[in-house]
Image (tube, rainbow, N blue to C red; front, side, top):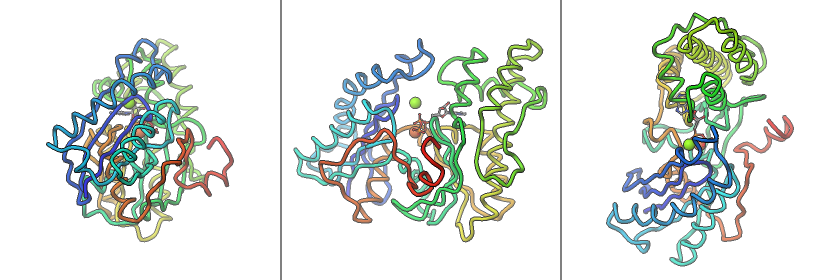
Length: 341
Ligand code: ATP
Ligand code: MG
Ligand code: FE
């Protein structure tokens, strides 16, 4: 079974071909970083237009890489949300058109499920259920991953996502866009103990994450003129690590029977964060699984793979499936906490 995956929910346009047994036949990606750089963040209208221009050529290129045509594809998987609605619609409508024209089944994929299942594409031995720390530009959650479409959310951020905190810190420090990799780079030359910064919610009975107070403290430190940029970056990164590790440790103490500690999402590309989580997993005698860096940030291979897992579970969509700007993996938990979290 061959799955074509499409991704267009944020600022990367991507197309990939994977097989149901986890071989990546082709993956193509066009990033819009340059287009958004002057604005210091993603501009939705610019993003949607760029997706329109990039997607079809990327699909053709991926098919050419795999020496295939659309007729060889068995399933079309497209991100249907959550994300910037203009971009999501581009990918989903393209997926619907391809599915309709070629007479192939369509799987509408939740972008977060793409991130959540990507570790199983990287490591086929990874079994359900696993504890997932999903850390990306828009999300920071701890999820019990029980199977395709089957998630329990144990924790989420009550304000900013971790990736958002990286991006805002980079902006404050004048490190440019996109922020995460720049902060990591600057932090290498800095002292993580140089700047006293808060660790919001660490050590509390509360399961959730919070990064807004940390961001404000970084702003005060930067404005004080007392500290070197590298030291602020390193201290900020260490504070994020301490928050992620503490919250994940708390969840591990309560999540029974998990096979592994897994991290996914763009922030999982951060080296020191991976090292700290690997140590935490070892403390709990659990395997640690993290996808390779390119599979952590947005890509279409993870969407194709989530499509493969859903298709294998009989989860197919019809052409009326909507694009959704918001789409929680665990709607019950989202409802219990109220909208916005
Ligand atoms: P979501 O998946 O929640 O919809 P998104 O798709 O924008 O959001 P991803 O592409 O998964 O997010 O991740 C991008 C985020 O990851 C950005 O906030 C970016 O700063 C962060 N990031 C990328 N590389 C690193 C790194 N090396 N260190 C820290 N953060 C990083
Ligand atoms: Mg991006
Ligand atoms: Fe993402």
